[in-house]
View 1 (cartoon, protein in one colour):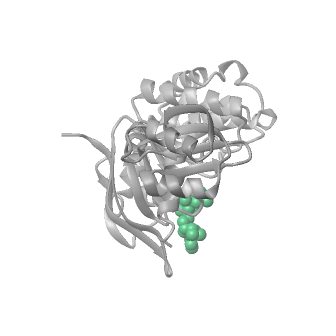
View 2 (view 1 turned 45 degrees about the vertical axis):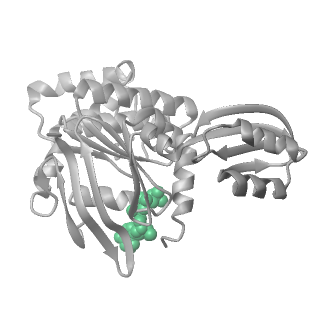
View 3 (view 1 turned 180 degrees about the vertical axis):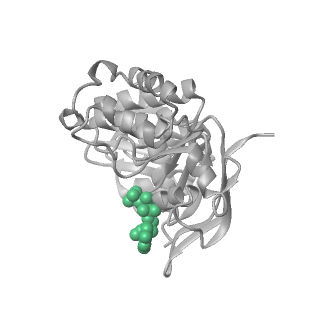
Length: 314
Ligand SMILES: Nc1ncnc2c1ncn2[C@@H]1O[C@H](COP(=O)(O)OP(=O)(O)OP(=O)(O)O)[C@@H](O)[C@H]1O
């Protein structure tokens, strides 16, 4: 039987008439990096707060590491690390002193503190700079230090809310690599939210997509991409609305993107397995086809179509 780090059943949280988390049933296996994706206001942070026992549910249940979020929240918080909105570091202290302070707060035995701090700073590439004042550090370095802080007490599960938000592409990639290594080395489960779909695609073994508090899809990025079906990208000349309508009606394909200006046309093939009849149809209707490429939908395309399909869920 699979061992789950998180299990929720019909988890619901309302604020007045707003259902911020709505009937969420979810299972997160242990030992993976799980991405929780959704547009602004989808209910991601509220879900994390419910899972950490910081907010009581209005209905439903949730177990984190086998503990109930309502009756055993202290046990959950003792075994979880979290990096939510703010890094929560002392800017005027050095990196090492920050971790020393938080290790004491976490009641790490004196004999273990130094080794743990050294290990985390080394793993995150910050050991050489441990004596520098945090105020002088870049955002990416501070974010890494905040993650080290969250890992000091060797949690089994780490919650990260938008860990790479505000980082440049290079720092974000470095942090992603560190997270993947830490997850392996420490054997932990990471539950993270992100708006960056290509990040989720690279980093997460499983993702869930929510909108308006409701779960729209869950699975590995690859599974979601496969479920979405194959697509074809064409470079064409002479495209018109009438031709696009013809493609939809005659072949049941979905037009994901069509730009008559630069000739870019992306179609979801749906049940249509062969591209040749589409090309023939285009040519017969006066459209010049310069390039044809079959491809799998990116996670971003899957995400956008899921969120748009469910636009009626207000
Ligand atoms: N304490 C609160 N009181 C009232 N409404 C709240 C409260 N906390 C969250 N909400 C509302 O619940 C909804 C979900 O918010 P939440 O912060 O969970 O979304 P999110 O997916 O984390 O969004 P973002 O990606 O923008 O951070 C939003 O409409 C928000 O305004």
